[in-house]
Amino acid sequence: MRLHHCTHLPAAILLFAGCSHVAELATAFSTPTSCSLQHSRLSGREFSRVKIICAQNNNYDEEEDEEEEEDGLDNLIGKKLGINIGAQLPALSPEEIEDIRIQAQATLDKAVDGRLADIEKLREELEEDLSRSRKRMETASELNVQYEKQNLMEKIDRLSDEFLNANADFRESTKKAAAADKVAASSGRGLDWGSWGSVGGMDVVIGPSESVLLGSVAAARKRATLEGDDDQPIVEQDNRVLVVVDEKKSKGSDRVMGRLKVLLQEAFESVIIVDTYGPTGNIPIGGNNAQTALIFASSLNDRSSLENLLGRVLKRTTPVAGSAPGMPPSHVVVVSGLGTERTNKMPYSMQNLLGGKLDKLREIEQAIVAISRSRIVGKQNPLDYTIVKFGDIASSDGNDDASIEIRPGDVLDGEIGPNAAANVLLQALAYQPYARNSTLCSAGSLPEDAIVEWNDKFVCLSGPELLRVDAGPGISSDDAILDPKYEQLAQYVQEWAATFEGDRKGTGLTTPVLVRKSRKPASEFDDVVARSGVRILFQTTNTGDRYKSATEEKLEERERSGGGAVKKSSKPLTTKLSKEGGVEVLVEKTTDGSIRVRARRCNLDCKTIVKEMSEGVIVRNLSKAIDAWVKAKGAQF
Image 1 (cartoon, rainbow, N blue to C red):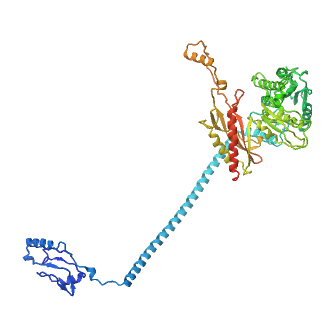
Image 2 (cartoon, rainbow, N blue to C red):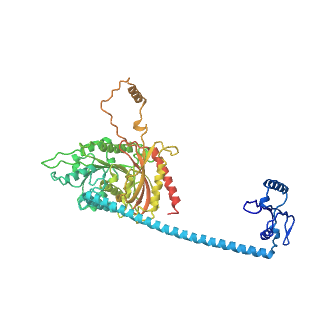
Image 3 (cartoon, helix red, strand yellow):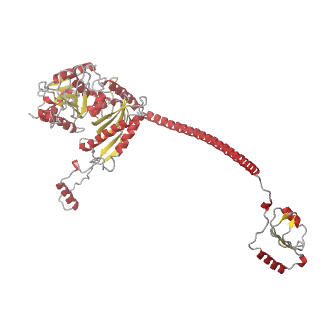
């Protein structure tokens, strides 16, 4: 400790001391004097080193003091200063040290426990606040959901009311169509001849492209238009079918026609007139106003025979004595044979070896298709066609279970029973819309008491169908749309189809494609309660009808260079986007609760060139993908 001089004190004291008791030091120097003390004892306590310099204020020389101070400080260099107070304190015993440690530890533990209790209390308060906040958020979320749901339902109700009010008349016809569709789906037969949807004696259109009468689609629409015109008289016509067959040439046709006539009389209350003629007989011009003509192709000699026959049957007759003009048939059903498109394969190559029997049948099939497509709209009556291919007609159908099969095109083999053939013709004549403008083949047997879901049999003609895979039963039978298995499979198919769009490398496709969502809705007529899918559409390439020869390319090059003699048309060229074909993949849940995947052709017209290679790649990949999905999801569902 150092004390400098002060003008307010009687003396200046400079003290360097190290002591263990400050009180004793204060007592020792209570009366300042002019002296110098070294190695003195105060009350029995030894100081290590003390030096005190005192001076009176009036005798104080500042310069001498500074010199003496500097000399004193120099003398203190390297020496130990002060008093060792710790050495003056008595030593603590081990028991006292342990007591102090225990008391300190207890004090520390108490403080820590108190803080931990405060922290735990704070944590509980925070958790309670968080729980209350969550409950408030959940309550607010539920209220928001209910509010939005209420707004949505009000909006739906408002839009529904507006739609229903604007379409009151249309809804009445829709109810009739639904009732007719239900009747058709349950039995495969209509209530009145010539329709697969009739209610209360009135014909009902099920869809925009389906016929409702014994005849073509357009004929049915025209009749509906005339019935709505009060100024135009309607002449009632008999339900009549014109049959052209030579039973000697067409083996087994007698058994088929005999059974068909019985079915007609058993199925309908109205009288069905069946006029049967030979191909060389005196067939009436206009077909005697029959709505449908049934022709056995094996009874004809060749293509020209069919053309001459239809040239006579499809002519309109002039009115006689004020009666209405005659209406020729607007639907032609041709019964052909299996193998007409497979003459390069056994056993059909052997059948075609002598006389080219199958080649002649194939020419007749092509002729009816060409005649139907070449009709001039507005000048000629419309004409629908159906080509039905049977194998050999068996003597009977037997008593076993029904084994009848129906497929598009020419793919089946084997014979068919007379009852099975008659029922297929009955469905194709009047009940099945997908049979219109289609080619189908059938084989198998059908006992007379057997029950067949005809709508499911004929749905394969829509497209036509390329693949059908059964994915097993669904999960929910009450709500088809909310079935998790159906929804997951539909999503899987969409993701699978997306892999074909864009870069074709690795897909195996030779044609670029676009993937779009399917617009085909569910239909009870198809026995489908839920439907979803995608359309894989082929894009235009420089192949097929767009291919140009070297000569055509030279002419175009000459025209572009301006040096050619090619005459340019004064009329602007109008090009219509052509349909290049495609594959539509549908995921469907049927009325019995099962789930299936179907692939069918789409985006077609009469000029479309079928891309069989690309179709084959898509169908094979789809089959593998669905099989893999079913195996992977088998344990889950």
